[in-house]
Length: 377
Picture 1 (cartoon, rainbow, N blue to C red):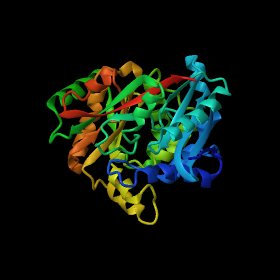
Picture 2: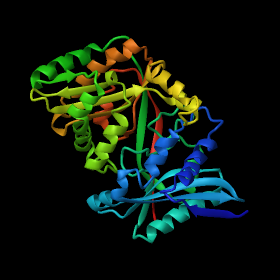
Picture 3: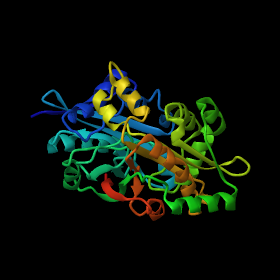
């Protein structure tokens, strides 16, 4: 049976839409897969829209078997990361496939040939343009509902990776926690001590325009400082920060954002969460129209039982000093008022014990694990 690999034009919206919709259609009967918003995914992959293309080269490929769509993969070279790390890494992302070794091999061959022709020596992934993109192949937790911020994949994916000779480069883990009926006393005591010792306070906003003006840029600058040095991280550029400020701060509920500042109103830490959009995105199949907007609006208003902990970022000089307790002493009462029963963490490197320590006072279970794979080209 003939396998054809087609290079997708990453400036052609119709081709990118077909590329994105293949993955969504692949999981149409899966109750755990959460589709992305199609329009957002197209924007991420579009070289005319995503500012990451200023320092990344990328090429999407699509596989066809007997003329029918059978798989996708995106080959990415992040030149900034490679220069900082001294690596010659080719990243792969948006890997979706039917369970067919010929299709899988053809996709990775196309991506690898593209990378080798540009001097790359290793292939690693799944990883996006930057850490703000989806990363990590699911290897445990296939019967757990996914989140808007993570990848879901069939359980045959890691089997193909091992068959092709890929090895573990790193693992991330995730936790599902029970939202308590009150803030743990330990958190309250630590928060009180930290706020007094370092003259810190929590800011809350009711105006999107004002929070963007006051701290929109600062939030992502703190993210750059806090995450720099973590696996695969590439600092966001000023244009990317502008892009994410417009994309995300305009849609997140303001009561789900906790801003911690010092006595000079300098940003020290930020916690951003959002109501789970998982079931809403499933019902809309990644589309806003005709009826997807209604499901998203219900989720936005908090008519769900789960909150997603999107990110916590604290300036390096304040890390391990209890600022996280101050963040959650602010956010937990809001979670309780909204009736959330569970909280989903985002990806945490398996050896990042400082991050995992912040959950020690909560009832929790580690329910998903995902992996970045590596192989020489």
